[in-house]
Length: 388
Ligand code: PLP
Image 1: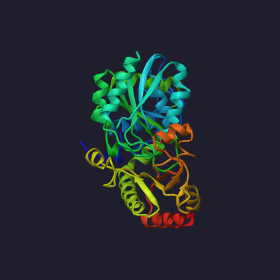
Image 2: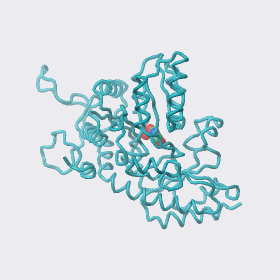
Image 3: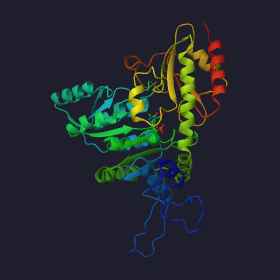
C-alpha cells in the first residue's frame, strides 16, 4: 500500500505498456482489431473504452477510494451523466449554492425531462431534514441529495457524513461535486457519499489546458448507470486529454500545498485591508467553517472571495489587475480573478444570487502557485487604482 502522494505520481497500469516507457502510451485509435470474429478484444471502440482513458479512470477511482471512475469531456458532462441516472418523477434536493452551469442544466434541461428539484442549505442538518420532510409532504420521491462540499464562490462547507446519514435515512443517494476540495482534501465516498464528481478542468488537471470531468462511485449498480451515460451519450474524454489529466494529477499534492499557503496569505492580507468588509476563506480562523474544515479537510483550497466597502469600485479593481488574469475557471497554476455576478454566476437570476449572498460586488480569486509577494503587490496596486 502506497501513500496518496506516491499514488498521484505512479498512477495505475492497465497492462498495455510493452515498451517499458515511463509514461503510459497515448492511443490515438478509435477502433481496435478483433483477433477473430468470435474473440471480443479488451477494447473494441474508443467511445466505449480505450487504454489511455482506462488508466486515468482507474487512477481517479483509486484516489477517490471508489471502485470505478469515468472520464468525461467536461465537468458538466459528468454532472449530466450523474443526473441522467434518474427517472421522470424523481426528486432531487440540491445544495442552495451550486455552480451556475449546474443550476442551469437542472432548471433548463432536467426539469423538462420530468425530474423535480428543491434546494436546501446542506450546511445545516435541520434545514436538510426540513427539505426532506416538505418534499415528502408534497408527495415527492426524493432520490438524491446533490451538493458541493465547498461552495462556489462563498466557500460554505457541508459535512459529508451528516448529509449522507440524513439522505440514506430517507433512502436517497448522495452526489457530491468535489471540484474545490479534490481528493487531496477529502474523499467523500469514505464519509458516505455515493457518487463523487469533478470538473477536472480545475485542480485535477491544474494547467487551464483542457476541459474534463470525472465521476467516481463505490457502487456496482451506480457504476453501470454512469458507464451507460458515458458510452451512450458519448461525452468521453479524448486520449490526448486523458493524458494531460493524468500528467496534471501527478503534481496535485504539490500544487494544492502551494495554492493553500498562497491563498491563506492573500486572505489574511485582504482581511486586514481597510477597504475589505469580509473575506470568505475557510483557512481563516475567523471563518464560520474553519473548525469543520480543519477537522475534515486536508486543504482549505486555493479559492477565496471577498467584498469591498463602497470606497472601492470592484469592477475597476479587477480591470486594474496586471498579474492576475481576469477570467472564469479556477484551480490552475496561474492566479485568476473574476466578478461572479457578471461572469461565473450570470446564469442565476439576480434575486436568486442575492438570496445566497452573491452580491454585485463580490470578487472571487483563484490563487495560483506564483510567488505570493507578486500576487499581493498586484492586488494592492489594483485596489489603489480603484479607489473612488
Ligand atoms: N462544478 C464546479 C464547482 C465548477 O466550478 C464548474 C466549472 O466552473 C463545473 C462543475 C463545470 O465544469 P466544466 O466547466 O469542466 O464543465
